[in-house]
Image (cartoon, each protein chain N blue to C red):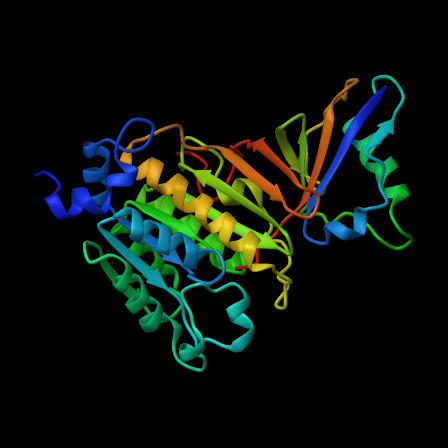
Length: 86
Length: 245
């Protein structure tokens, strides 16, 4: 199956190399997708634990703490590194 | 009490079908909004609230204006560099609308001050650079039982979330651990103004009783990629701030 990946927020430029679409095995989980994306980041880089996660527009937690979610074909996975500048 | 002829003239472009009814404008006039801080996002937000006719606008911001602030802090000017922001920003706001009362606090409010200010207000707009301050304002708005709008930005991207504690996710539900603070965050003034103006629009809708506020949602404007998204936020039942409400 294929999901769409959207990365936003702080240091957005560091994820420019990530693919817009990610191929995953059928019935893959959110953790599978996060692990796969982590492998595609630059060496030494990782998603911050406070990074928000939404699946198809629904907030499911942070990288550090999120609910178990099964992904489906066509889902959109959004990763948002918190921003706070005033 | 009705709008005076002078007020009707002032607000004539925002009164009517698809914008504000006269009753909605009167609701604004009867309202108080707290905006802290009033830099890149809070400044445009406070300006739009003042120009829209919110009856009382309270701003809070400590320190002096410095040159790098002037790429985004629209309430400042060359003449205010090295001078305290709050009183000068308040003067500027007063100069924009004689029908609005503007008060200022010349420092970042403590926990007790934030709660006291929130209790005097009908809405809190949270626009500081640190999550420590944002979470403080979130707690104050939750305890005071008033809506909170949190606006944030980094670089060319920004987020805004609208909270009604007890009914929607609060800031602490979303950020159970305060994310790291980056003192010298990059920012393009156009994005902070855009997010601040959107925060003001949500406040105007809520205070006036117009339209459908974005309660329980986070809007993200990614100016770098040219992308706008909305995320439906989830409450945390055990949230130390709003859990049990």
